[in-house]
Length: 357
Image 1 (cartoon, rainbow, N blue to C red):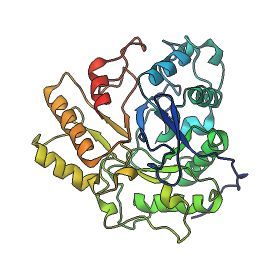
Image 2: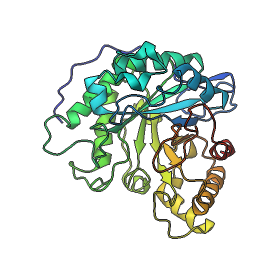
Image 3: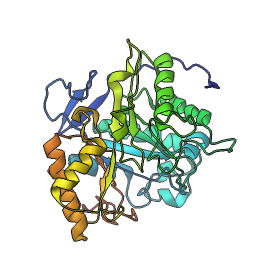
Image 4: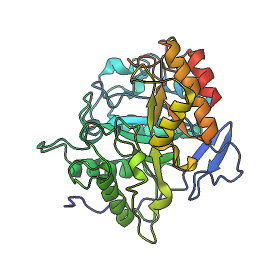
């Protein structure tokens, strides 16, 4: 692959941190290697906005950001997955002022300024941040990590986006890493060796690049499944490969996305069949290598609620402890948010299921 980027100055990444219940736990090479071996899990939430047409973290028109962050912390959430579009990341726009009505200090400021302060404020509450490249163009979903025949949305531009993340935010002690590409789907494959659509080959190129340029400053590289994020089954046959002295081998995380009948056709709600299905998709992976990147549903729908309860039971069975609920936002069109429309009240049905994990 033709590399178009300059070498970055070595980043002084401290050991990655994650915390829960007023305790700070330090990552070593394995996510379960915490200093006190207690509460070693990610209890996370997605907070979206930077990947939408608004190109701004949503909810800042309703409540001061510090109030929302304190609310997140006080309800036992220790990590945030922060979706962003490549367009927003590269162009660094200034959001419309009405989107920041409750946060006038951020009006007429760029996205990068807001994110810098977001890292600082969440760090004060020991909340870790995973940056998710959710889209290429803001507000538009695309199946691949590039747009064919588009001169801007290329793989090279995406690598430039990764470098911008690491340059701007990699030094923050609460920086977890990068979710490389959200929900590859349709044409995306794993293990076909077609350089244009094989997501495994793309992830391999990212790893090889990071091994060269960031071998002294590892961070978590989060990999979605194909088929809208859920399907990691082909990893058994076509695994990622690592050099003998690989640093990033211990920092690769697999991240399935799981939704019930509000978003997916579910042929059977029988527990045995659902468990077999999830075992096929990702359940063969070691639990410490799994971060559920998205999950959610509609609690008012009896089938969705049954599916959610079964999913949580499966998490317990497989000892899956690391997850990010979709989403904090109350206005996701497909699933219930953790917050109500006032951005300060908790949806108790969602929260109870969230606590059950």
